[in-house]
Amino acid sequence: MRQNFPLCFQFWLCLLGELKLYEANLQQPSISFIANYATYLTGEPITLQCQVAVDFTIHGYKFYRNDREIHRLEMSSNRLRLFSAKTSDAGSYSCRYWVLDSRGKRESDVSFPISLTIMDQPSQPRLLIQPTQSLYFEGEPVSLECEHPPVNTQVSYHFQKDSRKLDSYHDTLRSVHHIEFLSLRDSGTYNCEYSISGHQRTFFSPKSMPKTITVTDHLRPPLLTADPPNGRIKDGGNVTLHCIIKESYGRAIFHFLNETDEVTSVHTYKPQTRAAAITINVKKNNNTSPTKFFCQYTAEIKGRLLLSPTSPQVEIIIVTTGSLLWLIAMGVAVGIAVLIIIVSLVYWVISGKKDPPEDDSESKTHSNGGCKVTSL
Image (cartoon, rainbow, N blue to C red):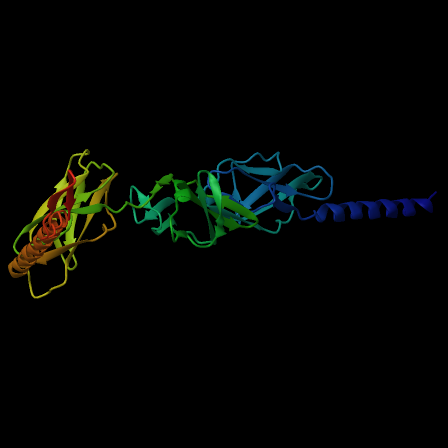
């Protein structure tokens, strides 16, 4: 019995030493984000947890930000909850736990830190359309720009038309969407948004306020007519030009032009007005070629003044006085010649209808046995 006692005593001493060695070496915990990503936007909830692989009684946890202990947390839980993230919450986070045993309160080593990044909510962009018009015409160029305050990360831009993403311009790094030639199918409501990326997350900005693009056909050219219609005016005479359009506009300006300059313009403010007329005094100059006139109009549509194409040209021929007398003399001569020919024809017809002349021999009558004989 006395021989066995030292052996039992030695066994208990070894067991107590191992227990104290176990108590002295508490396992280092690890800290992680519940959501498995480390980048958050302001206002988002954040949850971190402190974990230990060994299952034993833990009496409390401590969390640290930038190596300073965070107070105001439930020590009975292994989770730290930030209900609404602020930019000041960003930093390096770590944790430790403590236990109560025969030696009193003992704390574990601090975990390896993890970094929390807080980003501001992406601001709402503005959609800018250049040039800014209330109405656009087919063939005109237009640019759409998604404008926002600068951010310190890579940005991708997304443009939508009528709530559908533009397939031809999606997820690009350029903030401008350019349409080289507008067509009727480009009419619609546009907006844009942008996205930023960080630590396996992609954040989208709010959508911009919508902007509308309305595309219509070009203005049709007017029709220009002259009075007199043949366009032949004597030197120093007047010609009246009529510029005619088929559409009615609340405001229109008619422009009358020659080959080099604008002759005059006529303003109209009545929707029913579809034509304008001017009278021009024309004179001969050193140039003997006909004078060419055109017209076009400026129409106000939705507050935008738009210039139409030019009308087909009208030629005005100036006839000098000498040339006019020569033409009159030629006309008189031709008239006299025609009159002579007519008189000659009438005389010839009348002459052809007269009887032919009789023979000079006279008829002779004599009696022969009581019978009258007439001989020729």
